[in-house]
Image (cartoon, rainbow, N blue to C red):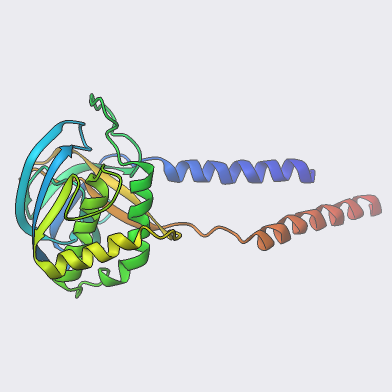
Amino acid sequence: MSKGVGYKKLALALASTALFAAQPAAADTIQLNSFWAGSGSVTIDFTGVNWHNGAAVNNLHESGGAGGFRTYNLNTDPLRTSPFQSWCVDIFHGFSFVVDALDVLKPANIALAGSSATLPTAFSQQAATDLGRLYTNHHAAVDLTSSSGTNEAAFQLAIWEIVNERSGSYSLVGGDFKASGNSAINTLASTWLNELGTASASQYTASIWTVQSTLTTGHGYAQDVAVFSKMPAVPEPEIYAMFLAGLGLLGFAARRRSRAG
């Protein structure tokens, strides 16, 4: 096999792997079991466009607990031994733990299939990027099951602001999405949101479990939730160059053996 053909096959394999990784999974049964750690009480107000279906929303006013969810994929973890944390991105439906739903995992900036909305039923690329940056910057504050209610609720508020705000800037006191109530939670969320105004790299990507239908078990409507995963490492240019050079040396050695034979 020549070096050129080998490199093309390698590139094709890498591209195929990346394409496969980007495909949404089939519908799985996802259980939202409880809060992941602590939770905090928040009050939110929203007037704007429902990102899920493009509908206009006026004077939405809600109060309640906020924080990450203890979540299970019952298809891959039927005994519920491997919980992961997910975050609400759906302020338009309420529910009570425990609820199961058939969900499909999709990239955060991919439109929902079958929507008849006139506006894009998806997060903007900027929102998807900022979700990853928020988690990169502050996941250590919410990863543990001992995380404080203040941290958990502040992170949830920041997610809601990123997802729902269309005014062009993040603020919990102005624009489409607003929060009031606990000042410690709001102040921390605002601090984290303000940091996004400074360019920074993201090490995590956000994906969305989009609800297909609720099951008979559970209480009320399920939620569209965000989950975060580590981005695959990208080889340094020097390492990639050394890899290509190695392919060249292998090809040279093979040619020498061929001539010697």
